[in-house]
Amino acid sequence: MAEKPESKPLTTETVKVCYVRNGKRGCKEIPQPVVFVQKGCNFCSMTLGHLQARGVKVKQIPVVNKKTFDKMREVSGQEQTPVTVIGNRVIVGYAPKAIDRVLGIKR
Image 1 (cartoon, one colour):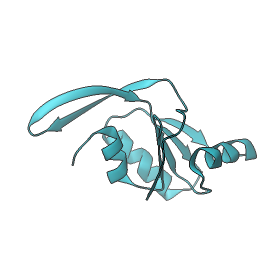
Image 2: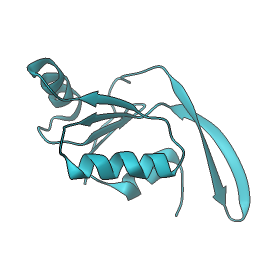
Image 3: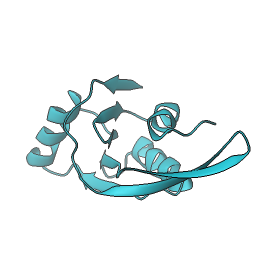
């Protein structure tokens, strides 16, 4: 898992995230997560499943050509998938704890 310093958001869409913390329920609006994925990438599937299990609507960007690959590399500095962008935070690889931390969800 690697977190990169803050960058410019890829989307202006927001999604509602609900959680239970210390026995209390709450909800908040967050920037819609964007996940760069590749076909056949197990870690991509696991990342998408993790976000789906938390009820988070995700924008997927398939890395299928040089343009999307270059955008992913520009955003993350990496050449591997998945790359998850939540607001201005970038998470590289399958990192459920980092995703939950950025979402503000405690396990």
